[in-house]
Length: 186
Image (tube, rainbow, N blue to C red; front, side):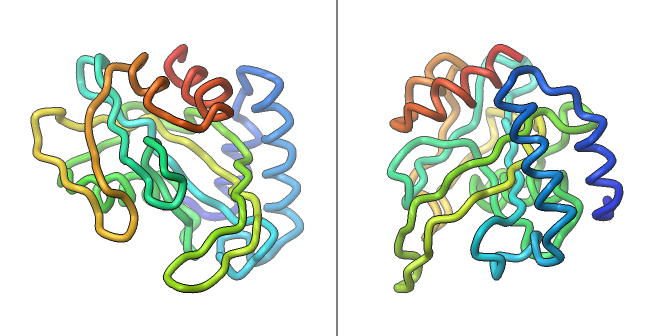
C-alpha cells in the first residue's frame, strides 16, 4: 500500500524519458503538494488517475479498450477515487474494464508519467467540465488467452493488438504520437 508521501517520493525519483515527462512530472508534483483533494474527482481542476500499459507475457500484444467517452481505442485505467496506491488502482481498472481476472505488475515502479487534458463531456447525464488527469502509468501483464469483455458504461469492446496496431488503433493523435508511441518504444 502506497501513501501520498511514498507516491510523491516515487514520482520525484522517476527519471523522465523525454521533455513531456519532465514537465508533466513537475506539474503532478506541484498539484500533489498544493491540493489536499487531488485524489478526488471533486477537485474540478485536476485529479490523480492511474493507467496500465498491459502486455502479454511474450510482450507481443497490448490490451486496449474502445472507450465510450473518447470514441477511441485506449489503454485501461481510471480515477484514484481516494486511493493513494496508484499501482493498485491501475491493476483494478484493468480487471474491471477488461474482465480479465488475473493481472500483475510486469515490473516494479512507475512506467510513465503524463498530464492528460480531458475535454468537457456528459457522463451519466451530467456535464463534466474540462480538467486535467494527473496520470501515472504502470506496466502490467496479463494472459492474452483469457477471455475479455467490455464494461458497460465504460467501453464497448476490449481486445489485444500488436504494439504497432495499438498505436494506430487510437483516433487521438496526441495519444498516438506522444503517449502510445513512447510506451511501445520503452
